Image (cartoon, rainbow, N blue to C red; front, side, top):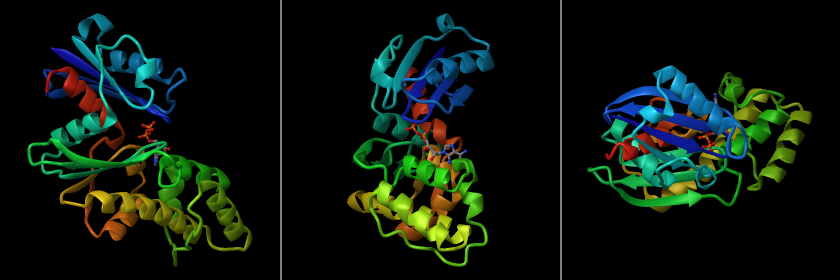
Length: 255
Ligand code: ADP
């Protein structure tokens, strides 16, 4: 029995196909989100990898910000439920999930059985999200995937005082034109994201094991800054960006 999860986010589209709610047979991501050709491209890639067609898939669940605009699914499920299901499947000792995506951040608390006990969400503001990092990467003329490496060799963490992304961007431009080391500026950028997200964690309370999902989990410097901010070790879920799609596929399979 094959089940599929499709997670249509603001920044990327993810598709996971699971066999017998046990084995992942495809996990594909396209860095284009809702309103683009990303969802269809991610679907095509997953069918190709799994060597399957739509008719072979028994059930499909869609999640993510763009889920309501996507037809051809059996059910739509919230990102909270899907990240909880996916993270708990991969790390059953997970009790706190931190998901930082393209335009929001969420903190989810799980019971020992993997049920959602509570959650907090920042969806009103780009600060503390992947979008903030994308804006800063553009200022630094680099790609978000290079940001963690750019922090290497930092000798201090240059603070960013603005809580608004637009003002923070001006602040970073001023730091760079004042001749500060790029590594120190980048350390401040990562610290700023960690600070914002740790505020959300504070609303829920961190219970170990703390795990991280979502695209920003690929930035190890943000993960380290979060560990400093919340004073707990943070484990990155394998294929962190795919967690929501995996959870959707598991829910589609009846888990
Ligand atoms: P959404 O579900 O909202 O589309 P994702 O969970 O896919 O968001 O996360 C997207 C964010 O992940 C981007 O805004 C970017 O900051 C970050 N990101 C994406 N790819 C990478 C990468 N290779 N390395 C580090 N960060 C990345």
